[in-house]
Length: 299
Image (cartoon, rainbow, N blue to C red):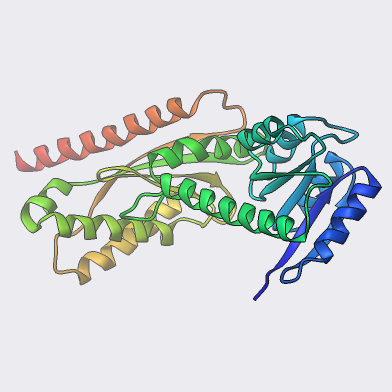
């Protein structure tokens, strides 16, 4: 059974584009919906407006040349696999293209229907597997939230969104209170349940476009933009409500948390590390205030 692919052919030589399209039409099993364009700028516009399964990309175009052609596509569209078309029979060019980010290469005039079909299939599957591996590397295995590496990779995008808009941004840094007692009294399995419960409630309390992270151990983080529909304060209130229900229904140790909040706006010029440090200090200021309050009550 064949596949149906949406293919973007970026080639400025009409005869090569025609030969490539004809070769694709001769593939016996797979079917291709082909869009042809002649410049890198046009390719990027088409990729902005349409979904494609694969790109066949000539390295030398009117507006870009060599490996910069690949880089110009990948700068905004890393989610689509690229197969390079090159007139150079030296494998070194093709290998350099792969090192930059292409999935494979074809030499113009040297491919038949079988080869082009196999190359496209393998490029798509290889790209899918690479994306899966990359995703696994930034996802916490226990909670399915992003891990610290994921936070490091994605947090700058949240800052950039705030800086380029009139929105304000926030970081909420959570720490589960007395989590060690849960592990000690009920065992590590119960501790894992508490962590997964808390992660699930975070996903309910915060909007879908908020970056949710398990930073490690019993520390969690939410980072996003304040909108007219949601902000950090209302989401934290929602977390408390959800935990109250959860704690009333569970047989195990109830979950409580402390949270440090930091806000920033479009004037922010610091680093991710600066924001994280501020949120960490705010968290431990709250924990210290809780500790002092307990001591006063005890005395």
